[in-house]
Length: 263
Length: 261
Image (cartoon, rainbow over all chains, first blue to last red; front, side):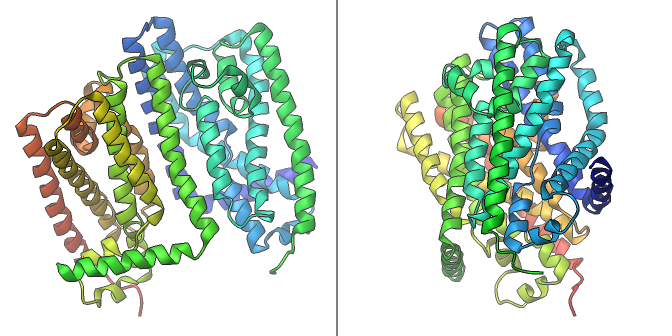
């Protein structure tokens, strides 16, 4: 299995060279959005009971969000939907590895590319913010585990949205709903500890989005420890298993529905 | 002038019709543009649950600004986005030839050919937001709303001029996706009061990329006040940019070599 996967990876890497220009842009613009959010939340602290620990938390939260969001991200739903609608799935069905592995390989290669090319920016921004940056070293192992969980959940949700093209001619609306929930309950726009006055913690804890971004970040920064750490891990695990099962069902049902028109 | 208004009416009507043909797609796209307002609104709600002032702006003031941000941005999307994004394609494929032959101004047809109709509901929401939250702040005279309207128009003109200049560069280079992503990222910061930025960043957003002039000043005028000199300078900048972009577009056009037969 692994040698096949390695082969797919190297093919994807060659593909990538073709649209380097686009990737270059997609690599750098998210920095602006996240840094603006950092400025916004720092200015919120200026007027409320902002203390230095809180300030460091905000700076570190958004700085590491730049990296973690890169690592967990997936964006292939529109392309996958297009492949299904165009009948390109047939092509993959004949290949030796299962369809999903091609998207996984592409995802990994693009992430490696983006991270590598962002490295200079991470270093420069990190240097400017160095006085306020911290991580919780004893949490590094749980962080890595939560990061892998986040990657799997993010990828599978994106993949499932793409697979909905088996039934729907237009997946944009689902994508938008997903995005709204993601922005609000994942910790993308604000650390989740700030949102609980609006949305009860119970709701955030049940939805998958927290486990895609906010949870790994708060583990890294030592905000999530002890009892909560374990219950969050439990919930993340439930989502990982649930989504894998859902994927299996949706994929096989989808294939039954799939007509496979075209060459 | 009358000819152009009539022509635009027809162009807009056909954009709407051609989109309505795919009903599900139409609805999905409207949901998509509504959701961006929803996320923005919730974002502000959460911010103001944690502070009373953002860069010196109260919640209502910031929401008036957000309404103005949405309004200017959506106007730009409705009228110009689909058109400006196509200019590099026209050039690349030599389609500009056909447009040059049409008996109207080439800048008009390049700028106004298609309309992005999905953003229309957002316009009404934005106007409602501006009206509602400015009423919460205090009684505001009709005159002030009218001048704010002019400010908003000026903002749309500025945004159009800046982006027209950006795409005009594609007469010399081919790829231009970079600028769109960059534009999107920059305006992302424009929904917040420019006062949250400090030092160099504030100067950057006021003078280099004038998001303060486009978005913050109109809101500031409506909910507080602006010195008369600032008002005049804002409109002057709008006029200058429009003139420069017009000149630059025709300068770029001179460099156009047809790519088709």
